Image (cartoon, rainbow, N blue to C red; front, side, top):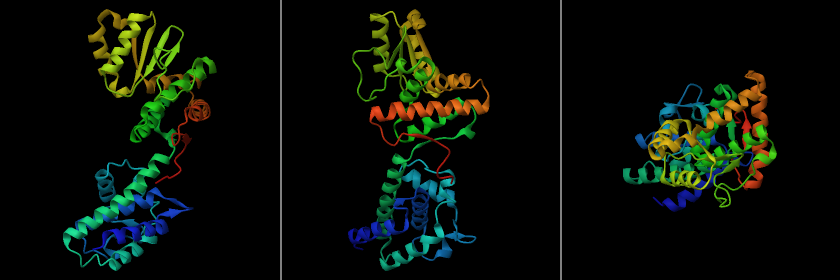
Amino acid sequence: MDFNEHLKSFESWLDEHMKLGGEDKSGRVAVLMGLLERLRDNPSLLDVADHVKGAGNQLKDHNKYVKRALERFTIASPLKEYGRKSSNLHGWIGPLLEWLKTCEFASATAADQLTFLNELESAAALRLEAISKGRPLIARYNKGTARAIIADILNQAQEKKRAKDVAEYLVGAKLQLRLGEDAARPKNVNTPNLDQPADFPVGSAAIEVTVNPADSRHLSQIAQILNDTTLQVWLLVRLADREKWQNVVDATFGERAGRVAIADVETFVGQSISEIGGFDEAKVAEALGELFKVYNERWLPEAGTSGLRIVSGDPDQN
């Protein structure tokens, strides 16, 4: 098989069938990858009826194969239900299988078939990764408390490997909401400010944000603050890491650990928002909206960050 020539043709096929309004649609690309996974199991199945069920709008064993494809390429699912309702499967599965036939896929050796499927799926995966990086973070208000909503946003950011950025921006936005705009200033999280001991010097506290498990760099930073200043240290970590961080700090600093408060970002931000909203569900939602407005308008532009905006609701429901 002439892989290179067919791959060029496949990119054109993707442009024609995976796009809507000029943009690749994540539901379509994810389910396409699931179909290619099914073909890995049995490359001889090149008829539509072999792969669809019902009226032809769903892939057989949909979750199994889409999940396997995403895991193969280490991509977090960009949609609920793995794109089950947004794939437009009936619109492109026939053309795809016909295209494979024109590539003489059926007559290729088993080794060539597997290599070709891997190349095709890799091309689709690159598009899905690009979509994921550019998608906004979603504030899903049905997650429950403000803390749970913040945790979900941080988890989405972690999938993009940008949880540190988002955690710091949310903390900064929260400080501005509670203490005024001058309480915290936006900065690029990847450019440390050597003139201050932590991310946010506030009053007699040095507030540092990290999403890492206990590490030597932050322990050294805490030690320097304790040695050189009279400041209290507030170390904000992910909820799952809080207890481990507390144990390490207690063991490392002994009595001086009394000057170190270990808190989780989820609670540090979420509890304040719940308090601002008077623990009333509707008012808490309004307070969250104000937090995200500050985050989007005051922090992201000045920090030069793209693709990390927080929006309400899910633009792709499935």
